[in-house]
Image (spheres, rainbow, N blue to C red):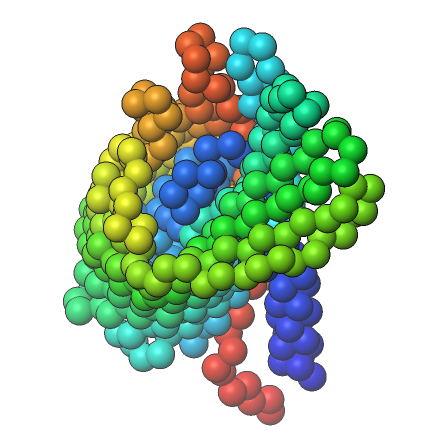
Length: 425
């Protein structure tokens, strides 16, 4: 009966998540409004550890028996024997973009990820899940005065890439593990232009360019934990992923409508080019230390070779991106039957890095500060994770746009012993 309840609960969460997951059709809604997402594959999310947003996003040397850290697959070895871990995250973002003369705000709500994991043997653990690789969403308006009247241009983008991953971790000796994630990347990158005029009798025209991407991506990880004392240890982590050429099919759809008519008529749909998109290699290193049963802290460094990115043989003017993050955690006690307020895990973190976008040949630096907590469910190891981050990218002191981000993540993790046959006497 209880197992049936747990299965029903997870099925309900999966169904709710499918409704919140960003749609990838050509006519998908613009779920975010981030102008820089018009470049490349959009805003990157593939190396985000959503459950640890409040701790600076530490992930490379981080592991937990109650959470699924898919950034470093070697961390799956931390799962307890005969345990099953399920987690999902809902995140809401509020954006503010401004220049010395213009200011705009937007927000959106979406599913961060769905994942589960469990040990297969004493030395082999498995995890799988679905998460975003990137997101595209922007709206830019322009107007020009022609002899026939005013002509208005609307540039829009939507879609993004998703990442369905299957991962395994192998513990070769106590404290040392290696892992592999095999991810299927898929999704549509949609960019469209609409032109309309206030002149009588002029058609409203809409041109949609779609890049449909699919391919495989491999990610590797190592973790080594050295026990300093029964209550103190230090973990070293490494991650790496190879450069991947995924398949991309480009199509073009032309539509138009009569003045005063809202619905478009499709004039033509053309399959244009078929080729590859190069997703760049990445590397990362981190250290995470448990100082005592209550305090722990760590630092991460990540780098990705975005200068090698190209699509259908065309390169974009990108930087190699990097990020340095540090974070700290505090838990008053880990005893399952202690007061719930003494079992809350508090976290805080900082991060600084350089984005891969390079508008007007100027790099974009980004800084973030975050806070979070994991609230346990009474007398269990299940919990609700809440993370908040404020970050800033660019500066309005120059011709660049300044962006302020306010991110709120709410996640749940379910930790159960699913493979024990209970006997009652």
